Image (cartoon, rainbow, N blue to C red; front, side, top):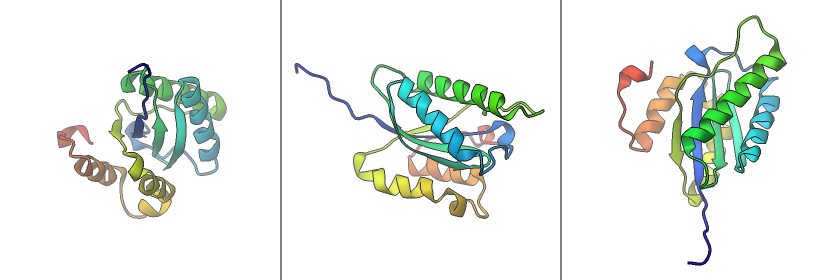
Length: 149
């Protein structure tokens, strides 16, 4: 082929350190917009970003020139630095070390967008860990439960 074409869509999920509820609703739009800017700087396309007080869901395209692990390191480091500069809280903000990343078929876009938009309702009585287990099972990811806590 004379050209290279890609459409690499990912759903990534990551939590605040110790799943502390530090992302207050009033701050979420600014954080999500800032994260979208980081994604664009990395030559990706932010398709939807949402979440609740203790975690974030990012639906994004990622260029083939960057590994998912490098993309996530840049996204998390840049956003936590910005949060700490913006909030000036006595408690430093940190993301938890890991993340979950899943590929998404273009046909699954609408369902994923509805899922991300419905995070407040979805987490009414459901923990992040329960949601993560459900996502890992849905995407058939093998995991050791000891690393979820």
